Image (cartoon, rainbow, N blue to C red; front, side):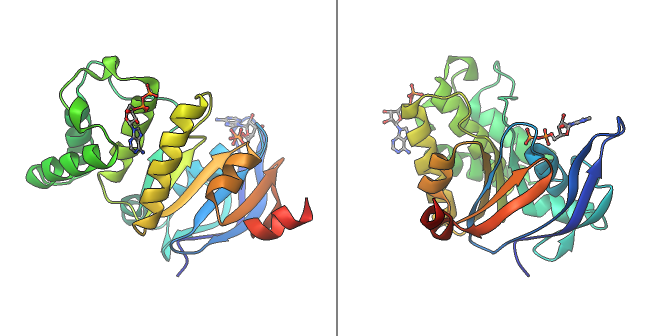
Length: 226
Ligand code: ADP
Ligand code: ADP
């Protein structure tokens, strides 16, 4: 099965806003996939449904063949989410943030400790493991958010506008980190409203606008039309 299969997905919020008007989408295993669209297009709603934080109104979403509505626990184990806002406790240390997150998700403690060392190294944060997170630079905090999502070893990693509001130096470090994650076999989906970012990183792209997919194609094919 593909990493992600979305079929005729609809979302109507309680206030009557239709955020998704029946969208369909596939992402192959190993892909680096961009979901591009302006503010309000429905990107966060879609990734909220994929990561089991938001309920769909109709339609189906499967990750690696697992229906997220019917087998929520199994689906959640396959998906890692990096939210847009930094949401870890700034008074905790990076090492503890990673170990506690893994523990919360059922990873045995010895394994969590082993993985925390690995992920801190991969994020170039080993030297910061035991400092208060508050003292990390903006780029380091961003990389820690990504490292944390990897602690459960998700097969699909979703990043919600990971580089929004960060400067070019930090963005380059994050791009490198994301490329390495994808190269190690993890399927990556990122939302962005910068075509240049999608172009830099992604092989395939869907463009979403007003709750509808308006393009779903290989990045190269899209660039050829511009
Ligand atoms: P994007 O992530 O592309 O900016 P969103 O998925 O956040 O788009 O929003 C899509 C639409 O759904 C917008 O019109 C937004 O105002 C609306 N919306 C998002 N979240 C909620 C919510 N919790 N309740 C009601 N409407 C919402
Ligand atoms: P800042 O957020 O202040 O820009 P950085 O994110 O650049 O700090 O991280 C500090 C150090 O980590 C720098 O020396 C930088 O070169 C190094 N670094 C950051 N990302 C990577 C990476 N992907 N590969 C190698 N070194 C990196």
